[in-house]
Amino acid sequence: MGNTLQRTSISTSIKERLDFSCAIFSPTGKLVANAPHIPIHLGSMQYAIQYQHNLWAGKLKPGDVLLTNHPECGGTHLPDLAAVMPVFVGRRIAFYVAARGHHTDIGGKGITSMMPDSKELWEEGLSVRSMKIVDSGVFLEEDVRAVLIRAGDFPGCSPTRRLDDNISDIKAQISSNQREIHLQKLCEEFTLPVVHLYMNAIQSSAEIAVREFHKQVAQTHPEPLTGVDYFDDGKITIDPRTGSAVYDFSGTGPQMWGNFNCPISITHSAVIYTTRCPIDADIPLNDGCLAPIDIQIPNGSVLPPSSAVAICGSTLASQRVIDAIRVHSAAVPPSAEPGWNYGETVSGGCGAGPTWHGESVTQTHSTNTRGNDPEVIEKRTPVLVREIAINRRSGGKGLFNGGDGATRLIEARIPLKFSILSDRRVIAPYGMNGGRPGSVGKNFVYRWNEDRTNFERMSLGGKAALSLDAGEMMEISSPGGGWGVPVSE
Image 1 (cartoon, rainbow, N blue to C red):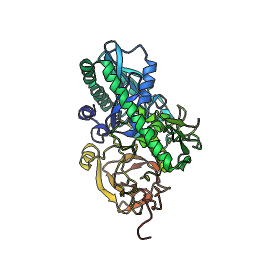
Image 2 (cartoon, helix red, strand yellow; image 1 turned 120 degrees about the horizontal axis):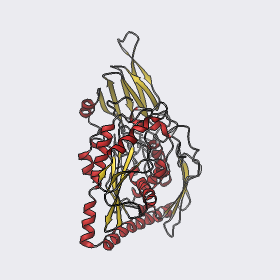
Image 3 (cartoon, one colour; image 1 turned 90 degrees about the horizontal axis):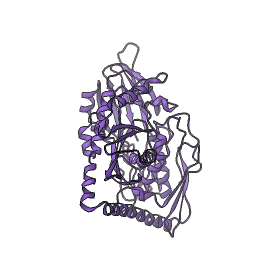
Image 4 (cartoon, rainbow, N blue to C red; image 1 turned 90 degrees about the vertical axis):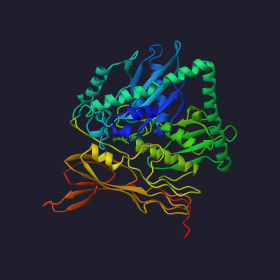
């Protein structure tokens, strides 16, 4: 599915950065198997499937495909559009397949639909709870175009600035779902009951592995495990007999008048990801990983915000959820008008561990996208990539050193608008077991002086939106934390 989606898509976000995920789900919408794509997509997608399954119960036909991205319906941030398709064997739904991809723009107030100063959901572009985009094999293109254009109906908002790219990428997502035919052939060869038997066995294997992991943790840490990170805090309590666990996020702050709110499906993704990573067993990431876990989130907090608040910064919030959980287990330290637009996730340094140094310039945890080649960036957009380098000595020192982050220096060739959402610009990524914290990240803009003979370098902070004149530049430096007391001490 993923190979088909990459080959048939057109945007740099999906084709080059690989910001997409594909997965197979049970007839009730529970995650069964997935490719190793974007962790934050995979754990949350099953909630989107379950929502659609309940909403359309008894109404779907072979060849139907649904579109959804709303955070209250299992979505992440709004640019992540999910194409959901039921797989029929005979007259019954035997599976669901889905492809979620990050679209470069879906309208709203800012280019790329990821403005750092958004406060309400409508500012961030198109939001769809559920929409049929393929009816019995017929693509409803005019309906899809109309809903993408309607994103500009709100004050100060524009419709999608990349309409043709949106349509092409949605078609690519639909095409990737056509791999359903292999599931149908599998059922023809082995019968549906046998396939479902093995599907349930895969989920049970994951559940058993998680319970055994919890039992091992309980032997070392019999008391409730607590940890704090900004944005989140809470505790984990494990039953050493059964391997069940309660992940209690009590103490998390209230939802924000800003866009760093985190939909509940993303919190579940963070839990399923951090639970799966330490398990040394060959099991897929699926719903079985969550079976022994009770996740408790206070209402009105930043983790399950209301349906009206902005959430485009939820990717950063998810990293803090993951870091808070990793602290618990003491596992690893953190590490406008139509035309063109471009967005990218800049890698940081990965945290070190008990027996290894952290990797440098690596996507960590919930993000797993690829950095674009400078040749691709310069060919598709009017910018010059002046520097792509390792941000040397930015990783925390320790017995094992944290990975170094990245430095990007990008020059505008024409006047353009630029925005950035970043974190760890004030609070450094911490070290563990005596390891030193990494450096804080830094964002700078290089502005022309009055007579345009030289540049003035100014700090931007972590979140900013600004305009660049031709020749002006942006510099982004990302920071990991170390593990263990440095040898010199």
